[in-house]
Length: 309
Image 1 (cartoon, rainbow, N blue to C red):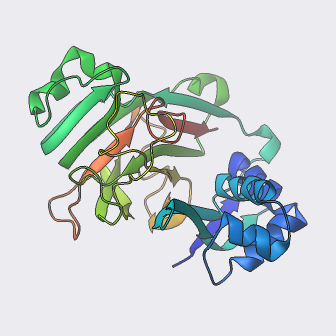
Image 2 (cartoon, helix red, strand yellow; image 1 turned 180 degrees about the vertical axis):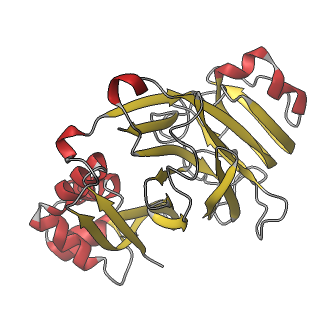
């Protein structure tokens, strides 16, 4: 099912990205072409009579805007990248909130995945840095080692990791109007399995606000950032997910998942904002989770929090 995206002018980065993607007639033609079908880059280029390199570049822009999703699928001559439309509708509310958009300020904080403040882990599990495994697989005690702060990939079957983000510059910027988290994640299967669903849950300040279903533990090609020593037979990359909380509710990948909001979650209260992610035993699909740092997977980022003031 295609997603519905609802934005206002406080979502500056996302509005700008989508506007850029839709500003090209060629990219609009690609979206029309993908309306009811998924195609590889070569087929897109052939249908629109453009070079393959041009098609690949335009797909990348659409992917970065979150309008198109691409997946590697096995073929006769190896895997091929097949693209389809991710979003059905985009709503942009020009009224950005109580204050003028020009007065809105943002602060970005990057949290390394090993800097969690609390955890509850069930094996199979593991934790590795960019250089080496921090301990043998399925060693739950490793999640308390000092070296855990160097982690670049973390995986476990069920349980959670909690991160506490500082609220910098509150006095300088004023009231928090919204908060957004982005991170790279996927399911956790033995080795890897591109069709291994897992229901992943998010808690903010101790309150469950929804989650998402990862469709697989992705492999079959190397993650763009993975170190050379990481085996090809293991998890390689994830997808980039987002969690946003504003005055109206909570959104996971731009889909409303809860009516909890900035006020009810106490985002403006206390010394930190708690972001907890994990897999519940009661979930329909208990398929584990992989979290990626900025030196693993496909995306050069840690868990990122953006505060909107």
